[in-house]
Length: 228
Image 1: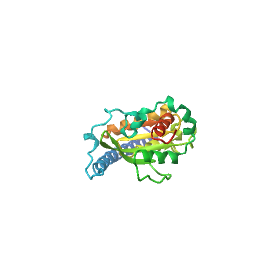
Image 2: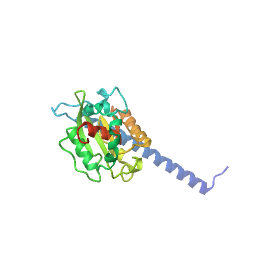
Image 3: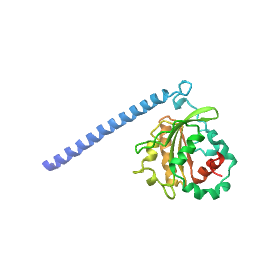
Image 4: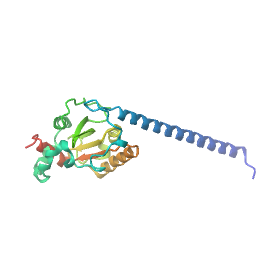
């Protein structure tokens, strides 16, 4: 069957689109590999307080038995929380729900001994970026904090103006990522952060995440004397 001029033009247009799509994919793949290489170099250049180089996470042992999700009870930095049960803080939950993020940030920075809290601004990737100790080892961390401004359960839509706050949080190179809220944290939020941490592990970063809901926030604050 002889093709018409219009059919030839359609086929040519489709081939051009496919060619550009292929070129775009190759360029995207090249940039992804380049960014992964740059992140690896960045990690290798991170030093601890003694100036000793911290090895890239492909060679690091995950301090949480390779768990993807870590509870606050497993963290040395919050070790006192083991003495405070969820039942003990039930009456404190209404007070926690009305606590501003600024105050939570202040308390958490004091608890983890972060003496250089960063200033809040619209383009930040995290609310706290600090090093903590876990069983005598230094871990790099990032925190996303949510206070009374976010009413009700924490959903993805409430994670930043465009719902991309978890993406921004996990764009940093860290051993553990924290998401804290003064109320319930929805399953969708956990699925989202878990997926992103799995991707980081696929890239070679042996990371974990920790969710701190309203109850656990109250347990921490009570354990460290910020709530009675």
